[in-house]
Amino acid sequence: MTERVVVAGAVYDGGRLLAARRSAPAELAGRWELPGGKLEPGERPEDGLVRELREELGVETEVLARIPGSWPLKPGYVLQVWTVRLVSGEPRPLEDHDALRWLGPDETGAVDWLEQDRPAVAEAARLLREH
Ligand code: DCM
Image (tube, rainbow, N blue to C red; front, side, top):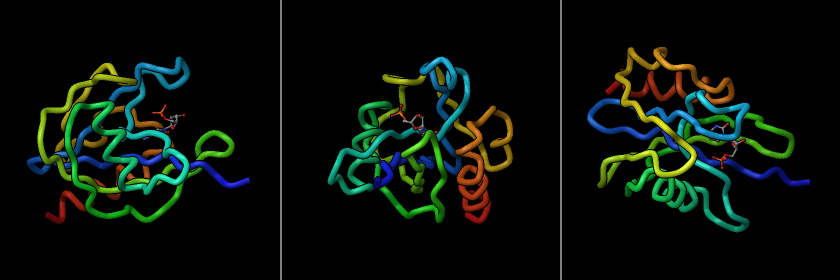
């Protein structure tokens, strides 16, 4: 069986990283994540990520680079993460989220991230600090 890919974005703007609090499903609600979602069959990861961020946050984005790694989710799914630049719009929690926060590079420990997002968040914060 081939694994389905969940794409997520480390969205940057003004030297800060965007964190999104999930509102569903119940077992994930209240935890923070890098926003994204499931790729459609045949969809390029970069295209799927731009689509998901448009649907979930109402923003236009540009995908910059892959954060190396692939993290297991529920059986049959893996998480892959890209850095993303906000191009236009102000993110709003339109779908799947009930709060958003912009975090500076030394504030990323301030929210309760989903376990599977933590390695990518650490790398995203390191990249922000290098800037
Ligand atoms: N997911 C995750 N980390 C992310 C984004 C998503 O663990 N940064 C998980 C939560 C869901 C699945 O991927 O189990 C699909 O996400 P969604 O419901 O947002 O499509």
